[in-house]
Amino acid sequence: MKVAVIGAGPAGMSCANALLSFGLEPLVIESAAQVGGIQRANFRPNLWMLGIPGETGCQITERLARHYFDLPIATLMNTRLLAVTKAGMGLNLRLAGPEGESEQAVAALVLATGSRPRVTPELAVLARQSDRVIVGPLSETIRDGICASRVLILGGGDNALDHALYLAERGNRVTVCARRQFSARWQFRASCSGQAEIELRAGCVPHSLSAIKDGISVTWNGGAETYDWLLAMYGYEPNSAILERFEPAIRPGLADSGHIQVERGQRTSVPGIYAAGDVTDCIQPSVPTAIAQGLAAAKAVEQDQTS
Ligand SMILES: Cc1cc2nc3c(=O)[nH]c(=O)nc-3n(C[C@H](O)[C@H](O)[C@H](O)COP(=O)(O)OP(=O)(O)OC[C@H]3O[C@@H](n4cnc5c(N)ncnc54)[C@H](O)[C@@H]3O)c2cc1C
Image (cartoon, rainbow, N blue to C red; front, side, top):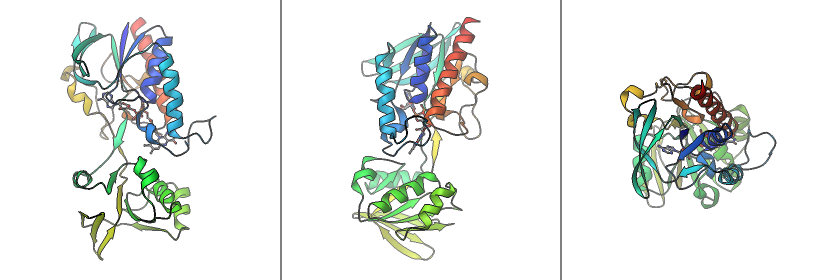
């Protein structure tokens, strides 16, 4: 019995592995060229995976991917979902991949499309105009390309302050501006407060941002400043826009936050459609949470399909 899994991050890979072990036939559909999800670029040691202390997100991704590719799981890479329609007791998927368009009939479907960095429309435009504007965390440029510079970070959560600490260690002077109070964990706030190279400004919103040669010009209430780099760390939003491609009668319900709503067994509001990982409203988004939810979704599929 074929079950589609959309997304090959930790949730999707775990779900496919479990479906296989429950005697079902997973078909994984991934829009990117690689498996692994958002953790693939994380060069920092992981915080939540018990048993492998110090291993980075990249290393965990490699570990998961090695195991995944040892399994006989059909995987369509670089493939987008064009439409999902009801077909008898199951679903019909229309796909667009490197070989062109195709259709797949499946008994059930698991959404594991994760999340992406949140960005304002203005910053999205600025990031297209200037390579000195980086949206979201942990790129190669952040790891290797920013040193002895003035960096402005917009955002007040864990990611903003973790990046401030990382960049200060590399000889940068970092200003971090949070719209309101800093929401980052106290450990990050305490570490940043003790650093001469890091300035934390709460309740601080730029009036305007513009790209200049080799940097960014910022105006505030108190005047104007220039920075060499601007990093936007405004958190994440779920990749749930994919539901627009579902026939309305089989479109799972969303929470106000835009996450896919799930109940016990990762079941959505539509029978036969499940969701796991960061695309749902996890209380603590993480690799182990995603892995556990992928497994739970597979178990629910098995129960529902055989009952
Ligand atoms: C900077 C950072 C640091 C983190 N640090 C840690 C840590 O130390 N420890 C930890 O446990 N967790 C950490 N996390 C969280 C962890 O990475 C996520 O919770 C986890 O990756 C979620 O897995 P997922 O499979 O739900 O989603 P993702 O990892 O986001 O994977 C989703 C997959 O779906 C694919 N996809 C999206 N849309 C479509 C579509 N329309 N069609 C097909 N495929 C699609 C994506 O390409 C991706 O491969 C961190 C996250 C970030 C961003």
